[in-house]
Every structure is written in C-alpha cells, then in structure tokens.
Image 1: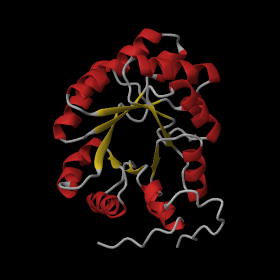
Image 2 (image 1 turned 60 degrees about the vertical axis):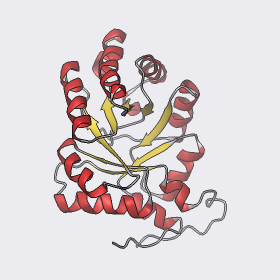
Image 3 (image 1 turned 60 degrees about the horizontal axis):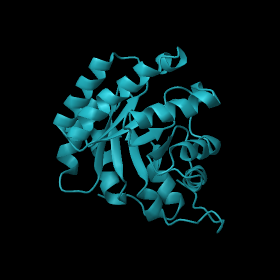
Length: 238
C-alpha cells in the first residue's frame, strides 16, 4: 500500500492536477486483455490525461473508454526507433484508423548519431504529417539517456522542424529515464513551440512533482495509481 506524503512542501499540487498530467502506461509484451481493461477503467476513475498501450490493444481501449475524456495513445517504431520511415508512417496510419489519438514515436537514434539530420527530420515528419491530417498528436521519444548534451538540443530542434507536438525523454525500455536536468533542458529548447513529456523511472509522487516543477507537461508512468494515492487520491473502485 502506498504511503501518503506528509511533507506540506511536496503537496504543491492536488492529486487531481497531477492525475490530469499523467499518461497511464502499460507497454510490457506480456500485458493481458484484463490488464488493459483495468488500465482504462483506472484512467477514467482518476481522470488521467491518456492511456498508452501497444497498438494491438487500441481496439479494446476504444471500446472501454468510449464516451470518456481519456485519450488513447500508442507507440510507433517502438522501442528502438529503427524501423524504416515507410513502416512508421504505415503504423501511424493504422493506429489512427483504429482509434489512437496520440502517437508516441521513437526517433531514429542511429541516424542522429551518424549525423544524418535530414533522415531524422524526414522520419518524424512522415508521422506528424499523417497524424495531423487526422487531428492526432505526435510525441517524439528522444532517449535522452543515450544522447550527449548537443544531441539532446539537436534532436529537439529536428523534432520541432518536423512538426512534433511533444518531445519525450525516454521509452522506458532503454535503461534510463527522465531527470529534472533533462526536463529543464528540453523545456528551454522547445519553449512554447511544443510540449515536454517526462517518462522513464517515474515511480513516486516526489519524482512526479519534481519533474512537473521542472516544466514537464505530461508524465508517462506505469505507477500512476500509486502516485496519485500518495498525493491523497482515493482507492480505485469500479
């Protein structure tokens, strides 16, 4: 059971405001139908911003969340970002057709590190173009733990040039996650041109609050329920 936070300095936000910034996430390969249904019901109960599931679960999420305000997010080129651009575009089109409203694509990290800026930008633009035609948002996963300072800045600029709506720190599958310093850096680079999503390693309310205070607009976590309960949120009930 989660321990509620007692330090008043940490309670700078209500549990409701934190919940409204969370993408309730479940991306492991062994996830079951029952787990996805519960994820969706928890998201509706706590008013999370979105759920994020693998593409095979979009149809189920649509059926459970129909009539609610919870957005459905899914992954593109996940988790490596090394798919061909045509494949990422096809994945995006299929996801939108199935009912996804927010797409989380992994940047071509190898291309960035090879100095191929044109490929990185074109890869992202292929997804943003098809997504924006249908009113869907695109979050570009940078994998900041793999990047130098200069590469973090450059990847943000390329994502912006390609029309990204968000830049996101990590997939959660690369062994590194969001840090306060990285969130502050990304926010400084993108300014008001895009939003910033923190993801990876967000297990506690203290971490969530620190990342929000650093400027994150969204948080991606599989620990959403325990985080809001730490902040005084209620027990989940169906």
